[in-house]
Structures are given as C-alpha cells and as structure tokens.
Length: 293
Length: 291
Image (tube, rainbow over all chains, first blue to last red; front, side):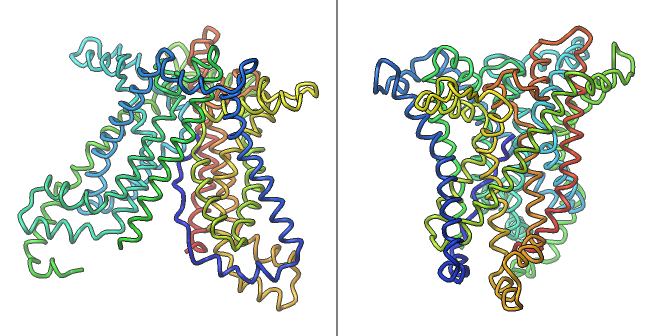
C-alpha cells in the first residue's frame, strides 16, 4: 500500500541556512546536483507526458480528445464512480463518528487508554490490505453460517449488498484509521481540549453541543485533513473491493482496460490530477491554519 | 490558559470526575467496531492458517513455505528489498539535491510533487507506465524498444514502477533529516581538517542513519503490500505473494489449498510486523534530531 503521507509544510527559512553550500562549493557539487535533478525530472515527468500523449494520439487517427469524452459514455462509469463516492462519504462519516468521541474520551476521562488507542490505530498499517481481505472473506461465510438462525442473518446479508456494500465501508474505516487518527491527533494536540470542554460545560452546554460548537470548529483543519486522506484512499482502493467482488471506480478501470485501453489511461491521468488536487487541498488547509495562529 | 477553570474550579472538578467515571464509554463504539471488523478477520486468519478440514494442523503453514508459494514469498521480499534500497538511495540523493539548493521554488515544487506521488499508487500507476513503456507504450513504439527484447511486465519492470511512489516517499522522509544536518557541523568538521568524505562517514551518515533505515522500512512495507499495481500490470507472470493470495481468493486454487491463502496472509503479516518492529524504535530515535 502506498502510504498516505500529507505533503509536509515547507519550511521557508531553511534555505538561506544552507547558503554557504550554494556559492562556495566546488563546481562538481553543482554539476552533480544538476544531474540528479535532471534524471529525477525525466523519470517522473516522462510517464505523465507520455500517458497523456497515449490518450490523445491514436494510431491511424492522429490527435483526438475522444478518450476523454468517451469516459462519460463507457458503460458503468456513472455507476462505479457514484458507488466510490458514496462509499467514501459513508467511510468519512463513520470514521469521524467513531474516532472523535474516542479520542476526546482518552484525553478527558481515560488518559491511560491513550497509548492503547494509538497502537490500535497504527496496527492496520502492519497488516497488508490483501491479508485483511483474506481474513474478511474467511469471516463472512462463517458469520453467515453462525448467524443464520438468528435475526442478525439479515444484517450480514445486507452489508454484502451489491448496490451498496457496507462491508467495504467497514473495511475502509479500518484502512483509514491510521491516517485519520494522526490527522485528528495533531489537531487535538494543538488546542487545549480540557479547558475548552470545561468552559463550555460550565456555561451549561450539553455534550453534543460541546462537540459541534466547540470542539469541531477548533479542529476543523484536522477533520478536513482526515476527510481528504480518507477520500483519496477510498477513491483509489482496488484490493479489498476487487477480491470481495464489488465494482467501484478502480475495479471498473481495470475491467474496461481490455477493450478501451485509451479510456483507461485517460481515467488514470484524470485520477493523478484528482490526487494532486486533494492533497493540495489538505496541505493548503494546513497552511491556512498556520497563518491564522 | 487556566482562566476559565479557576473561577468555577469546584464545578469543573465535579464535571470531570463525572466524566472520568463513565467518560471512557465514548471510546466504546470504536473499540467494539475495532474488535469485530479488525479483530474478527485477524482471528480468522490465525484460525484458518492452522486448520485443515476443521482440525488443528500445521499443514497450511508448511505448504505456504514450500514450492511455488515459497517462491512467491521470496519474490515479494526480493522485489521489496530492491525497491526499498534503490528507492532509499535515489530518494536521499534527490532530497540532498533539493536541500542544498537555494531555490525555494525548486524545493517547494519537489516537496509538493513528492507528497502527491508518494500517494499515487494502485491501478492508475500501472496504466501510466503501461502507456509509457508497455508493449504498445509511447516510448516503446517511438524508440522500437521491443526489438531489444524490452518488456515492462517482469521483475525489473515492476521495480521501476514501484520506485515511482517509493522515491517520493523517501524524499519526504529524508528532507527533514537532511535539514537537521546543521551547516555548522560541516564547517566544524572541515575546520578541524576533515575531508568531505570523513564528514559524511563520521557525522553525516550516523546522524541520518535512523531516518535512512526508517525510510527503507517504510518503502519495503509499501512495496511488499502492493497488490493493485502488480495485478493490473503483470497478472501472474511475476511470482508475488500478494498475487498468489489474490488468485486464491478469486477461486483459482487447488482443492484442499483454500486455507493456504490464510497461511500466506499470516506469513505476510509476520514479515511486515518484523519490519515494522525495526521501524518504530528507530523513528523515536530519529525524532531527537528532527525538531
């Protein structure tokens, strides 16, 4: 799994610190640096450019933007994309609903649970998604057998519904936990949760009101970060969905790649741009927070 | 900071005491969810890996470490090791080139691009490279690479593609570490008569070592767990443990081998866990240098 690491905030004042290295160094250093940068630029930019060329330059036809206009008409596009977006929305809501109260509770009421929560939220990074999927696909039939005589049988069937597989939402919440936890943790560390909660409670606010009017507005950048990272994760997730037999967006791309090579590459270019936009949104949310404080 | 609390201190205490008695209940939904959705599959993996026909047995684990399964597991470890080491070296050089550059524009654009590319994986990554260097790829056809026996769909092709997200991840890991390498240390070393090589040997590398090793571990884990890219690119032509598990889960498995997928999953978790166990203490150690 490519780990979701938000772009670090750029430290503006470090460059001058390395000033002595810039001018006074022997020429070999500058040549060496130039060579490294040119090779890196070639390696990273050539596939982006050629992938775009591949989509617009069809053999025997020449330049055409058909691949991009066709995206919307290929069968299954709307269905798979809307499924992915729906799964992402549900995952974001569930991960926040589960994590926020738990993280507040370990800060306010049970500090001894905090390391436990931290370990629990890091563990999904150790288990490769494909192993997790193997576990799920072994668990589901077993649970179906065990729950067959009970009223919960309908539940286990419902979460595997092809139209909106809740089982994927549950799995994605687990996969998103490490990233969401880190994003929310840094936001909660930056504010004085205890004082804010005490003040609000003393003024007579109810717990739901404390959450919605006091805590959430103060950590909105952390929430936005968690939401964007989860969105990026769900929109690109292939392993779990493919192996459990569902067809959200990434699985659909592979399905059409056999017959529509140009379109599948066009969608890939599009999804690179989307990742770019999402992560820029995360890092700019962080920057705005920095300039506020 | 304590302003609001001092006025209503007794009430605040009371409130918190009340919160303390039952406040942890707010963590309960997460814990229950976690136990079922993460704990359930984890337990199933362990039970399944040690069960044959409903009886406890070590056969699955043995089988998962034999023949084609062992080849796949070793293939994954080898690919991940190649990607981790090559990615670490290249990423460190790139980070050093950026850190020593005085151009802020260069620094910011490389770091932003690294943030994006480190997260760019899965299926789109495979297609980006298939369009470039695949059999009908633009570079392949333009330069007639197929005449030289070029193929992207093998071990080294996968390594090349995996570096596309591994090198940027290494840049993100190493840039703060290289920033922490103070110019004064270099000046002090050079003033004492050290050669640049001696500076790196005795100061630079030891200070960077925890971040370097941590980066290697992260890269290894990323390449080891990757499935989508390999599945979309090579199908089953390169033996990888993720592809084996994928095949087994899609029903392409010999009779009596169903639980081998679970045994292979357990093997993967053990390898990833071992590697992570190296990483966590290192990360704590390197945190000292990165302020």
